[in-house]
Length: 145
Image (cartoon, rainbow, N blue to C red; front, side):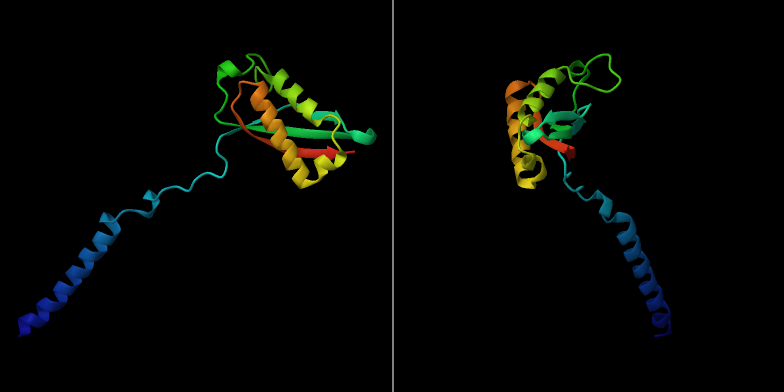
């Protein structure tokens, strides 16, 4: 009976150590969990310089635009010599956006719902006019005067 009193606590300590070792060494790590999906899928490409367009009633708007592309442009899709990256189809992109922004009501750039509809129209027109896989249009800065 005396040996049992001595062996039982030793066995309990060994079991506790084995359980801790299993927990810390052998169980899958929390870092192995699946990473959350990104909020923005694709690559953003800022257009420079900003767009300055005539609006209705003698007002003008200055808009900075970024495109959400399905994938980053390859070197073949960019102008070879440029201080800031420009797409080879930049003139078509800029002409399309300028045409869609020129002559709109000032409220179309100020009102969020109307601005969203305007961005959707620009996206649709860019998809028709260019070979660039544009999935979204963002107005990063908007000034109306």
